[in-house]
Length: 254
Image (cartoon, rainbow, N blue to C red; front, side, top):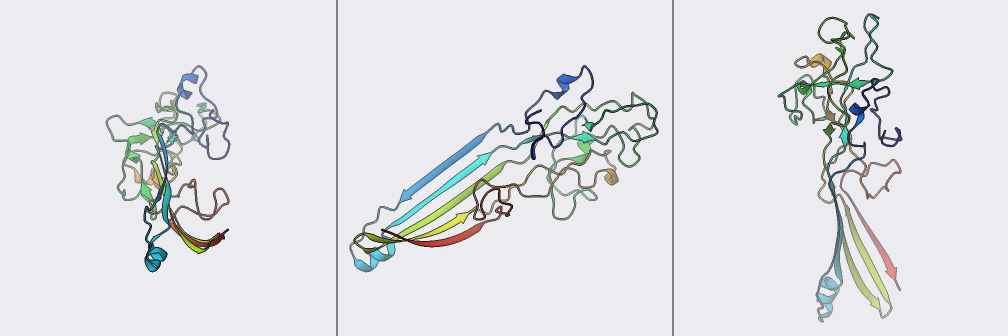
């Protein structure tokens, strides 16, 4: 399954698909990115003033930068595991898919009272999904613990998509000619210059029961930033490089 559960991928893997139902596992891999755009730009200002003071201030400027955009990653919505009265109903050794409520929009980006937690942004509509098992009771949804009521849900693997990613850096460079073979270079580095927020996949837990907020608390909300491809604190070193950061540096070139 994708890469076998390495790091963030396959974190919601279905551990034991039903016999004869391997087709339910057919879907996008966990790191499937359908659209991806990357660009780099460099522009040297075509200014060559001869006046000494103007040349010092305006000659030797360069602007450059990078732009990254890609569409969202896929993920699955799961049901709470069966934990009811031991009626001989086996749901497998791992979580299983939830069901989709027909005709209800899958995504909802406005806060939902009783569901959206402070400091998070709603992404999914919790009323669009129903857990096969009621998380508040551990019993099969429908009121009676039976194979009919505890069937695996009808959502497929990685049927939903997380938010898009957008990132842009800007670099401003100025050279000062100090001598025939010596230059002073000053750089302004602006990481995430537009301060655009980028979030990881939504917090899921398990699907709840529609119109029952006590079973949906925190479901489908964005709560943490995703790691950028560039950053002042480095990439992959544990620092939070997601907000806009500005740095200045100077160096001699000879």
